[in-house]
View 1: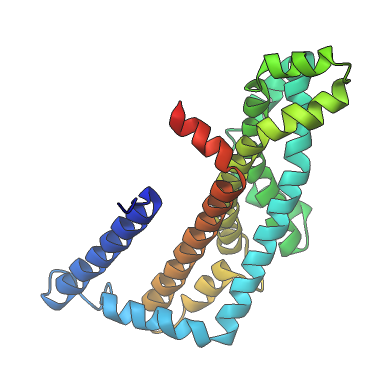
View 2 (view 1 turned 135 degrees about the vertical axis):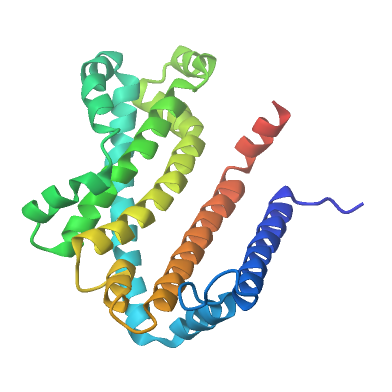
Length: 262
């Protein structure tokens, strides 16, 4: 008997849902329910999105956005994971810093764009800083939560054999927390992409998907270009999230199996 993969079923359902939405939009445009002059036909938008694949200017903007996204995500992991271990391992430090964290966490990164523009003269540095700020929270919180979820019996067993704190950290705490960190990074990757494009839109800049949308706003086919660029931004988000999910399933297969059993 062939075993169906739930992930494959979700991908199929998602693809059918998107195809159905475009079909409804196409029919609505051709029957006059939606004015094609106000909102272009789905076939026109898809044609424009396909043409962007060979547009060197757009590809350069995509590369700029992904560059800021990747650098911001790497810096986030380098900062948030050690900070999460520090706060999760030292309850007194966490208690002292908790009010500051709870104050900063709800502040939208988009609201900080004017401040970032005043501080950073380079738009790329501004984007990366905002990405790090916004993406830090899911990685930090998941790291702290994962550290608290470590089996205390495993740590005590290792200590009883004479292992020190550092050995317990590397042999028990880090492997047990790694799946939670991976989930936090996956969530942070989506946030990072949203913040990167939003910063380009609101903060300006010479390159990026957001900058491409701004420049396209003055053309005769502005709506087509804007929606086509938005489609590619969504596709990039789906692809990156799918890659992270696939990596999690392969690297932490043991953790997935344990969760399914529980």
